[in-house]
Length: 135
View 1: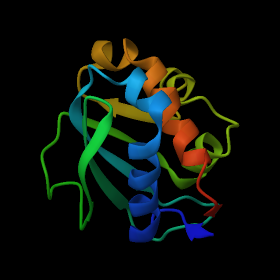
View 2: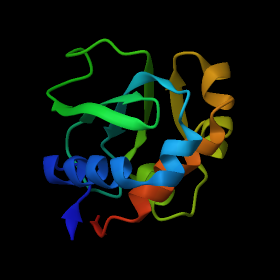
View 3: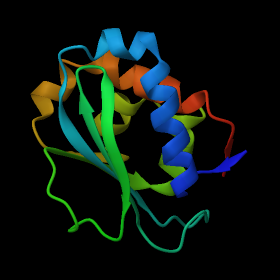
């Protein structure tokens, strides 16, 4: 088991993502990097923001990093929300697009581009679900 939000977790996520043919197909035209930001939650999990950066390009992750804060790198997109909501998404109890529509998560960047790539977003989540994650 790998602790969600730890450097080992994002490393395992990237390896698994780059091996996922369904994601490669769904995101074959995607170009854009993301900050995935996890806020502290009353349910616990983290005391400070967790900031993960991923450079997603044509169905692969070209690079990634844990960042010290949200200002450490400018990106095309930011997807962010509370730890509890991230947990629900990864456990399959909350759809990542529905989370945006219900304001449980926030997206900064070209929303229309993301909405055209919902299949890729769902494959990202399915990939995260493949990792034995400790919350």
